[in-house]
Structure formats: C-alpha cells, structure tokens
Image (cartoon, rainbow, N blue to C red; front, side, top):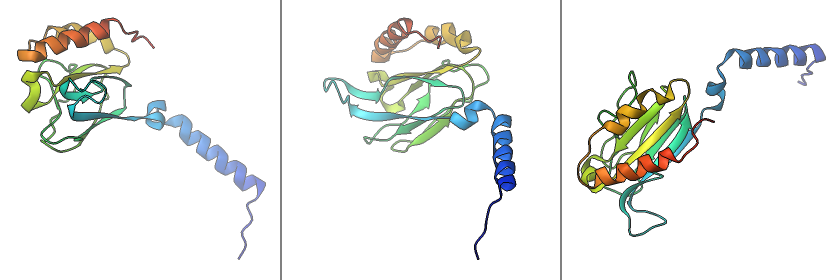
Length: 165
C-alpha cells in the first residue's frame, strides 16, 4: 500500500514540530556532554602524573561532564566547599565512569580521592546567571599537599580567562 502525504499534512506536521521546539528550553535541545579523563600521566607532558585531562572545563548550564576511568585507580568527586550553593555534590567510585549534569552556574572543584594530596584536582566552570556567586568561596577553600600548588595554578589560569561569553 502506498501512502501519500498531502501538502496540508506536511505543513501541519512541520508546524507541530516547530511549536514543540519553541516550548522547550534552548539548553535542553543543545545540551552537550564533555569528557574529562582520569589519567596516570598527562598526555602532553609525561612528567605530570595523576591528572585530570583537561583539568579546567568551561561548560554551559545543563551540560554534562563524563569522567572517564581511562587509567585504573582513580575516581572523581566534588571538592568540599567548592560547589555553588544549592548544587548537589557528586562522588564516583574508584575505576568507574561517572556522568554529572551541571544545572547550577558557578565554580565546581573536583578531585580524585586517592590522589588528592599529589594534586589530582580540577575545575568545572558552569556559565550562566549567578556564575560568579561562589568564586571567592571556591578560591578560599583550604588544600593540603601538592593540591594547594595545583589549585594556585588553576586559579591563575582562570584569572586569565574571559568567562563572559
């Protein structure tokens, strides 16, 4: 049996699709998943050990980050005192991938629990209204070991970034 689509049916279908698209928030339609690898060695500087790559990610509210267990022995979890108010902390298991959706704009510190003291930390910047609200609190969080120096490097890099767009 052959079915023909009339011009009227095609126009009604197109109008319904356009109407649905206009009622959904733009970020729902364009949400992106970003990957961060958990590594024993940095892929570009082999002298750097126990790293997230990239260590800084700038994303939009509604985007997700997938922490990939590329090398064994790592996890990804939010860092204490380094997430926006109202945001949910996250904690992945050792050797397991975790995907987190970031709906609240702001600065999210994260770390590998077993390798925190050797500086395996990173930052996700979620753009959107209120993004800067927790910046000073995140910068003021206290760290120990090599993590303290790595956070100093991360904040210096963030200070040089244009986050307005």
